[in-house]
Length: 131
Image (cartoon, rainbow, N blue to C red; front, top):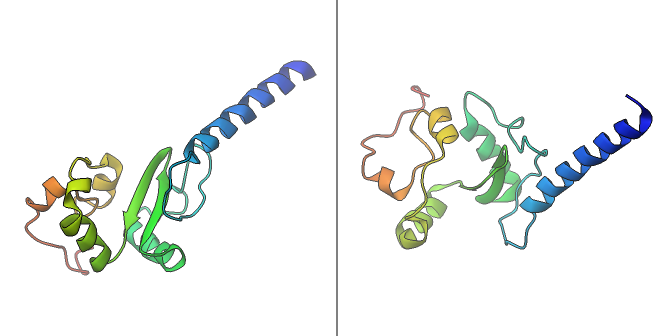
């Protein structure tokens, strides 16, 4: 390839990456959270076997309500009993229409990423020795 073709391709790739990151930073007010890589988000920061431990560590820096990205999918994560209770009990109407995220359901083996409709079907919580 000649130099002009390489420069055009590099410009297109940089424009695509800029567009994807600018799309994330729209005028929507979101909770704070770690910056993610374009296309990958925060996937490289998460522990594959226990993503909840990573989220606990991140909550020490960003607070109990934070925004993370799994690839290009934006997630608002709630950490802690009081925050989850406020969201799911006191503000249940605002959270009722949200569906599960398949990657989280698979990663947490069905014990995380609950929505309102899933809480009624949850019969037990795993102990720390089962995790």
